[in-house]
Length: 367
Image (cartoon, rainbow, N blue to C red; front, top):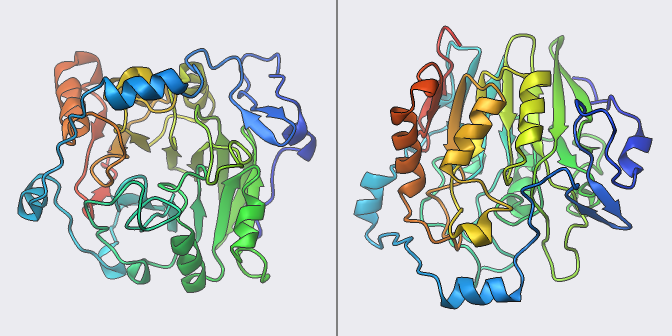
């Protein structure tokens, strides 16, 4: 297994946020000293909510989430099917399972990888406050199959779980971690990539690295996303955020990470790297729109992403797992996605679905 190598020069990473003049190239993040920012081309980025927005959100809006406290009802509405490594298999050259929230386990042409592995009961720096999990993971970390690599989209606690990262690395000492710029030092402080076996490859938007296994080569692309980052009171946007694409000889996978609707970039992904055989796209944590729109797409916008990246199949994620603090009814992301997909003639030849946690999705024969 080879050590990944980047395909872009390091000088590209340090540019000060001036986007390339070539409209067909991927956007570059703005770099302001030690922090990153979304570029001016992200026309739908309105910045983070201000104090007046927070006041309106907390005191003027109605929370419609209404997650039942009855576990029996949750077991019916959002089933969780326990699985182990031996269950994660298929004759297909592309299959996947949703492990909750933004964690997706994928096998693409014989390579196992995982997106944003999070197992925490609370997506927080403490077990006392923060988004609390209301559906359990379908698989324990110790029951994961051998992992070849992992991708991390950004540093928010619901996407970067320190304990999970450490446990996964302990169980898979040769694992390769692909992370956005600024996150390598965090990983090394957690003990990842410092012992000479596991490794961390840090990339900026539009950069790719090669991963090789058993003579097969894969390209791992770091792609733009419209979001932000923060783990503590003084580190906002010190680490970049991103989406990811994994390109094999025949199959192509896309994971958006958290993102607002930077639609011009999504089209570039489809034009340059698509069509994708499978995409994992968030559909939850989007209401009220005035508060969430810049950072989280809703189901209708998620379908737009699905179309722009030219995905043949997509799975809706980032819903039904944690109390994320957004105000949509807890089943609305799933139900709204299905309603829209069923009602639109222009979507009849593609698939964008939700799957139950622990169920295996397999690429159709014609995908």
